[in-house]
Image 1: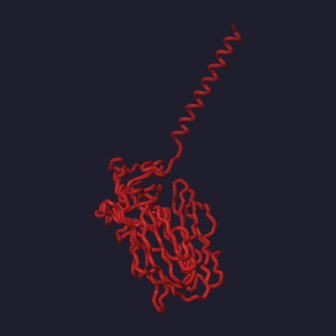
Image 2 (image 1 turned 135 degrees about the vertical axis):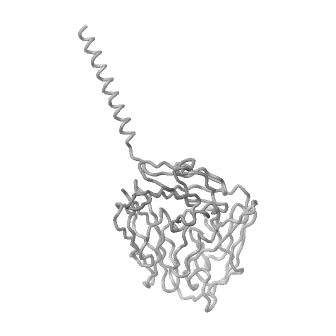
Image 3 (image 1 turned 30 degrees about the horizontal axis):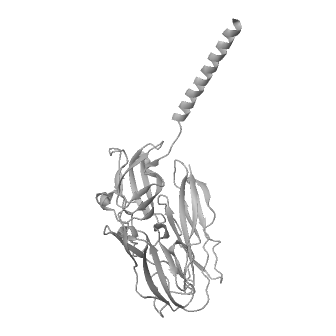
Amino acid sequence: MQRETSSVKRQAWSRNVCLCALALGSVLSAEQVFAFKIVTPAEGSTLKSGQAVTTKVDLGADSGIVKVRYYWYGELAETLVQQDDSDASIMPQQDKLSDDRFSQKDSISSAPVVAIAALSSSSDQTPPFGGTLNVPKDAVGPMRLLAVAEISRGRLGTRTVFDEVIVQVEPDAALQTIDFETDKPLQLGRTGQSSAFGHVDSMGKVFELPVVGEFADGVVRPLASPASGTTYQSSNPAAIKVLSNGMLQIVGNGKTILTVTNRGKQASLDINVTVNDEPNEPPVADAGRNKTVKAGTKVKLSGLNSRDAEGEALYYSWSQVRGSKVPLLDVNGPEASFQAPHVSEPRTYRFKLRVTDKKGADSLPAFVDVTVEP
């Protein structure tokens, strides 16, 4: 009888320990810290061009949020300056990636013009700090949805936190025609004439050509990126060589026919290359290794390991292609820098570096990720 009583007591004690552990676990779970996050649409979602999407966010432990702004960007598009409240009245009108406000640069400083938010939401919206926004009508391929939350700190002013997701956008209409948006035939390297794509045409120059497609819904969409399903072929790789990311390189004089293909549609472009035939290898950009830093620290981006086969001096160009915009200093120097912003949980900022030699030959872009921790 005594043994049975002891056994019952031990079982009761075990049950109490388990219940206490479960209760403690529940408390810890309830106290877990989650940062500001886009819940809908989910990472990797497939959306339709022009589709109305209800976006939702989880505020997590980020208290004091007063406003959330949403921006659409192409996957590798450069991040523009955040929009202020003065233009809030025109925000809902933004539904085109090709809008000049997304690509226009200041004529004096060449700095990008502020971005127009696709949606600006506060606590009184449904759902709070979310709502309905439209996928840009001319979007196609991978797109980034960036949400920037403004947090009030009273007399200390405001700070921001962000989250972003990459989604795949597909038009709901069939592609009817595809074409190059450039002079035809395209003349590269004509004596005394600068290229329409930046530097004077020269051996080794790397450039991109604008390609657009007209769809059955009447919308013209940019299709230059391979991420949109586009492929290129050069009939004479000794004159124009097709590189990755839809880029092209001048490698010799001569003629070639460049063919672009997307969704079963094709277009061709005759290209004549007559550049100085002095050999010139394109430089190689090196943006350094990915790094992890603490919020508030000064971050240095180094392109010092970039190189040119002929040993020529290089021109540098840094830009930001992921994350909420940060003030990037010395963007035309070998070492750019910025102050790591406040974050609630690790966030990734991606930067792009391209270098150009004195003869005008460009490198392929190099990328570096900087993860900022609280």
